[in-house]
Image (cartoon, rainbow, N blue to C red; front, side, top):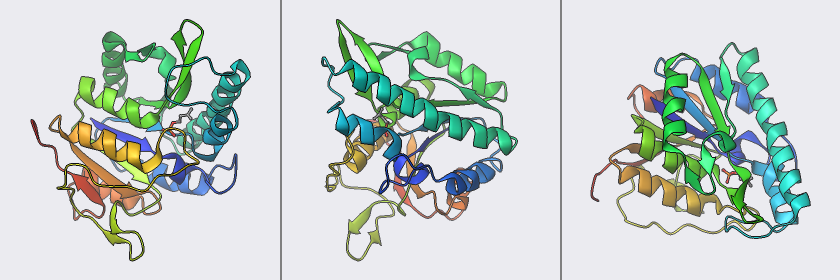
Length: 250
Ligand code: IP8
């Protein structure tokens, strides 16, 4: 099984609130059709959801956030999720919408429920889940990032590969020249912060990718503007992007 995160920066126009990039999503979906293993999709919020999360000052820490904010973030995420589901269906793939409330209790994954996701994927459906505003308990809520979901699913389901689809070629050693890092060998690469992203943007992605690779799973960062690279990563062809090589006990 292959686990794929469609980052918010690739599926939405981050410069413009509430704007999906339908053409790019469609191109990605068309390439996903070329993969003949089962896949599970996680997607981010991009300019749909982070716009509201920033407005209502909501973060990943469980707190008493504005109930209006929780409702609005959730609603906006559902809107983006529906756009993605429709594009999968229109392009003859069979998505299975799976909000994280289906497999999360507080901020813990429900192992039995997560294992069920694998069975859904094995049956030929494509489970699609997403980052969300979630109930924590005792009047508290929190923002669960899709990147964190990647780590939970990787830990429990042990995919053959975990892929983060980005709006960039991968990680750069130098932002000016955009010199690509083909393989991460530093323990904690330093990444610049993005203030518009309440869940931590690239910093969180690198953090979660490092955790997943330490489970012994290869993690790829690839550019979704060139979606054939996703297929290349899966089919072990000449890969372009950044690899976090799976190393147990690293
Ligand atoms: O874009 C979105 O998930 P992410 C989380 O993967 C929310 O961090 C609801 C802001």
